[in-house]
Length: 285
Ligand SMILES: C[S@@+](CC[C@H](N)C(=O)[O-])C[C@H]1O[C@@H](n2cnc3c(N)ncnc32)[C@H](O)[C@@H]1O
Image (cartoon, rainbow, N blue to C red; front, side):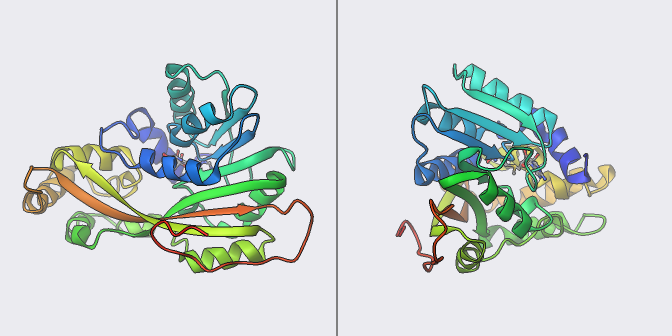
């Protein structure tokens, strides 16, 4: 399968998460810390991209565990394999497949993780349902998603979107829902021990040019590629003019992104389902 969305990630794969600005890494760090995979675990990293989650799990599950990175972009799978090899991890393998319907037998994994992926799927519910089936009883699901873009940056994205042929970035992704909505959805799907934590991640760019490099090589490329080639430089200059006025005293740019992290379990034995309300800023329950 090669949807326009996957074609975009395929094009972005060689430079994905390599601008130097840190976003996927800190998000993955937080997700893996919350999910806490253990030595010997079988972990599935759904929509593995360049392996931000996979490489952070690989050490925790050593020596006998294994991480499987799943993606529909072959370029991303090569990135995950290369990042794991560069760190000397021999326990990361990759597999081509759809996040919404991963090609594995039921109860194959102790942990299923998906960082920055759910908002790209056509429908969250079938994916969450499938991921539950892939977990062994008592296994852990963890995923991250954005819940609040930095309002100071709205004029920048509006300036870029004004050049898009059809519609801007928001039209290429789906709204995943609030922490409370996701907690309720997970409980309704039979997950237990549902916990949703929120955090603000500060993404710091050396300046407008590094922001552009990150933007072009990551999910916002979905919007950039809908700007005609002839207009792309003008759109970038419009963004740069705004960004120049937003620099911190040291010349850097900071984007404060609100993120949510859901952790849930497939019950060890089928039992009544409970959902707890979401908490903020680290008050994980
Ligand atoms: C925003 S990136 C996140 C990558 C990585 N999880 C991270 O945190 O850096 C989304 C990834 O999901 C993949 N992806 C999107 N839709 C997918 C699908 N239906 N099945 C498998 N992978 C998918 C993309 O190819 C891309 O690698």
